[in-house]
Image (cartoon, rainbow over all chains, first blue to last red):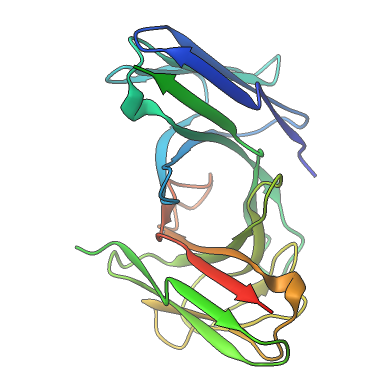
Length: 114
Length: 115
């Protein structure tokens, strides 16, 4: 099973600060997912990346496959970025379908103070 | 498009009662999943389906049953609810990308309390 560790568990920052959230995993993967869970509970997919870097607005995700590590950065943070950020990696299920599933980290709770 | 819709959003049950959670998606996705989310733990896979008429067990299947009679719907059943099944349940779906796990689309979650 692929173990996933996120750090920090909780992060509070002032509006405008540069934010970094880290994710480490134990088994080599094909792609890593970053998800955002809003305070209301809904979960949305932010990124899926297998190498290098991806950028969407103020969010940047990077991955180092050799070191089994990914980071999610938020530039010019804003209170609306307050959410739980979850990293997920594939793990193969032993089933009739030989399908892979995602193993999820426990999340990083980010709070941005105005 | 509504995306992924879960019903009900909230439910309180007594121990031993039964209920069904419905997940509906309008994106023609082949794969559908049911997860549970508990405090301090990552999302855990209960059951999943790779297409109409198929289901398979995930990490924590005990106490749950599922059915996928139609491609757009994935039902999660609790035959005899237990307090340990108090949780927030999420349904998700994705396309069959033929290899890597593709982008997942989640429902809004269903909060279930078993007294």
